[in-house]
Amino acid sequence: MQLIECPYCGPREEVEFHYGGQAGVAYPADPAALTDEEWGRFVFVRANPKGRFEERWSHAAGCRRWFTAVRDTATYRFSR
Amino acid sequence: MAETLTRTGALDGWAARFAELPDSVALLAEPFHTMTSVRGETTLRPNTWVEEDGFDAVWLGPDEVLRTSPFRSAAELGGTDVSAQRTTIRLRGAHARDLLETGCAIDLHPRVFGAGSAAVTLLGQANVILLCLGENDYRILVRSSFAAYLAEWLLDAATEYRG
Image (cartoon, rainbow over all chains, first blue to last red; front, side):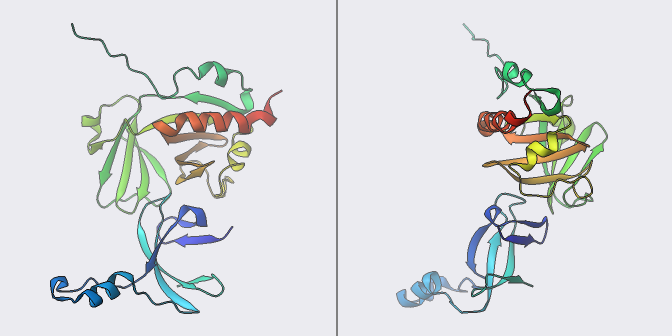
């Protein structure tokens, strides 16, 4: 099984982690001002690149901390 | 009329089955350890535990430490009382590490996970805090509701070491 490097605990098995989607999606500064379409885009629309992708991961079965990792979506290889 | 509530550990009633195991994988339930959670900056190194003044301090995260003691009260330890969350199992004997390795993915070899090491990880399907006390001597902290599952799992995993 693949090992994922937790920045706090070190390398652990993939099953200990929980995926959190794309990293760096900022919460709108003024959510009330958004149209329904803009809000829908903020909530649902995410990048889906082939290759390097910055994403959030949670070490759910370990230290329970969130961190940002860079993963290649084609090879599943993690890099920093 | 006030009823008297009896204090019961999560693994009460398992002692007889634990006693059937050989000394090479001796299991012992250690109930009623006081545990408190302390948040904030810590000087503990990641994945370690240390014996401090009257309690053990376990690194759980960059800003989270678990203090445990079988003798002290939660007020004496400080922090938030989480004693009811977990119960404790002691595993020791010549095959203790072999037994854990059948269900735990982290490297338990003494050069990596020696005395003083701690890890929050999975053992079988259960989330545990694993403390290494010495060679082939481990303390396992497991949620009380998972304790029966883990005891059953450990007994099953120990089958090959029975005489």
